[in-house]
Image (tube, rainbow, N blue to C red; front, top):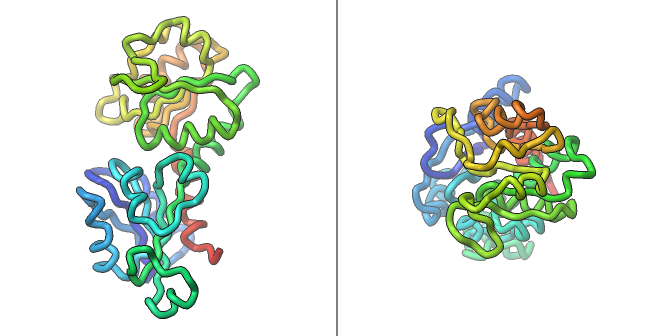
Length: 263
């Protein structure tokens, strides 16, 4: 049996577990299982791997997307640039064969951990079909682990961007200082915060929605509910809107591809 799972804390609900469990049933994959592994501290990762020798891959969610990187033996280029990992491939090897192959993990364990960021793949695949030439400047609401993947995609596409946060940061705009002028200038607005996630469906990021027009594109990484208050306010002003569900599906399928690749 090949085991896969999600690490993070807390893990009260999980898109990944539901998605992969249904995938295994639909595609008649009988030798795989997906479970939740709540880790309050990322230093518990090594013990988890030793206690579960059949683990072949892990998804990573908050708060570990950044601090998990110190435990990895190799990190893919875009994930390294983004500074966040949400997918780990676990390669089991005996210490002897690993030493001969030159792939021995940096901690001397009998497994090698490779880090990827499939959020980058998922976000780019979901966003790209919606972009027009006037979406050349973006506001990123929030500056956590998910925002790192968004920044990487925008950078790769040559889209200027600035983060909007509650606390001061280098080059950031504070939510309290955001004006209608900013909204008119930045036609692409991406919410990377959990604001508006169920059950807090009446909440939305505090931005000047009155300045949004039909030229705007509002992308919300939240997928539950499908129509967040952030997106609803965009719809009311005839903006193009998209939630994070397709992004999650794309990143999940990319993770499955990585876990099962021989490369």
